[in-house]
Length: 428
Ligand code: PLP
Image (cartoon, rainbow, N blue to C red; front, side):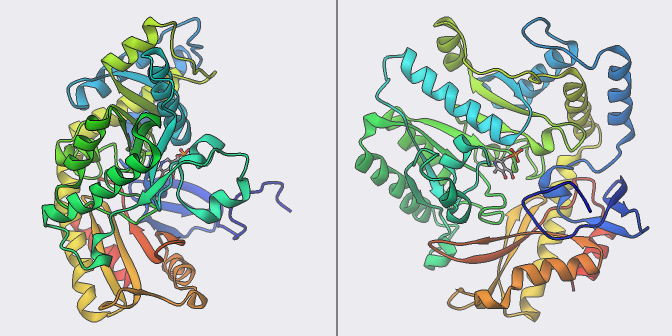
């Protein structure tokens, strides 16, 4: 009997070792990591340079409580992150994961409002569906009823707007008018809530698991930025899944040249080598908060030097191997191969994503985009079938509002063309 418990009750194989895009279990079976461990292991497993950097740091110090010490890996990693983020996003605050990065972002936004005389602003608008983490604060932002319902009223209810799944409305995703149409929903919500009560709008630039690699329509991101500026609302980007390079740029927001006020990164940032996340913010926000007494968030493991040495080595490897370029190239190839499957299978309703953050959606009928009947349990079945083929994929059924069975195909950023063949062989 195992003494462990987790959110899934399904039996899982016992992990033995992992290398590159492959994972072996203790029974000797080799799996392709088609989901990068839920978009974590971005640069592949057991990268020798990352391991060497971590081992070197282990010989120096593994502990660096930030109340007492800054650490060299922390300083160097912050400098690297700032250099990869758009100009103005200069200030980096380390945390240990995605949920905490998002909670920190909201706390910083709220503190900024308070110290700048805007204490009436407290509401954070997000999209429905969306996922921003599993702590109570992060769940308050989350638009996914099965996850949030059991925890009400413990969490704060925040306003939500529909995610721009324009293809479901029959709108043209490439038409900037579509983007304006969805951004107008945000403006309407702000007006309904009372603009002076709204603190921030939070969104994933490229949707991760909650919407299945949803790419917003043309013009949407820019319109959202304009609307936030119009009402003095902070724009927070959740780049926990889309950040780190796998969309072919360091940040999802970079694809549209849209700069948020605060952003959160994690997952691919530590790339599975260490629990690591960061909140990155505009200098003026941090300066205002620091000047008024300091940011009220801290935790024991913030900026742990071992985690930071891993994060730094990960970012250096991404640059050294030009992995973002590989993501753009191999991602285009993999997406084209998935799109080709649509000719064969009428139940593939959509193939979407950027770089190697890709997904396909299964439907009952592509013309109407009617969802598959729930009793088919398609999403469980496909994941289980893929598992039998020793391919790991990641799925999420989006309930509430509109249903969607989508499957994320997001292998590590080092995936090669022959490995795309291998993945497709297993998938079909
Ligand atoms: N934000 C997004 C978009 C995520 O996908 C996740 C995790 O899947 C989180 C936040 C929470 O990150 P973590 O599980 O590291 O707390």
